[in-house]
Image 1 (cartoon, rainbow, N blue to C red):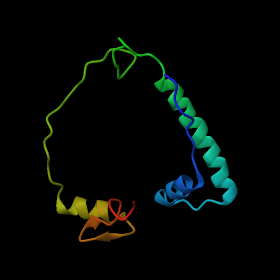
Image 2 (cartoon, rainbow, N blue to C red; image 1 turned 90 degrees about the vertical axis):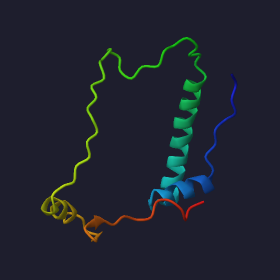
Image 3 (tube, rainbow, N blue to C red; image 1 turned 120 degrees about the vertical axis):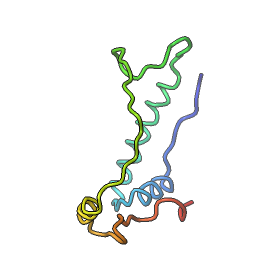
Length: 105
């Protein structure tokens, strides 16, 4: 299961920083590029481990999943207004957030 070396180039680092809205110096970009390469190399190493016959687990100790009915309920107007008032940028009693989907390629 040989795999090719994972490489983070400057363009990918610049795009990642832009998407994360980080303003990084050239030294910081170089440092993070090296760190990301190490992380991805380790993940690639883990991907090479033979897991045939190994059942996936969520927790080391068997636990029963406790589920409850999903019952949507509306908050009273006073609670909605109180929660949204914590935001520095709200419109129509809703949180206003930067566009996340679209615009980036």
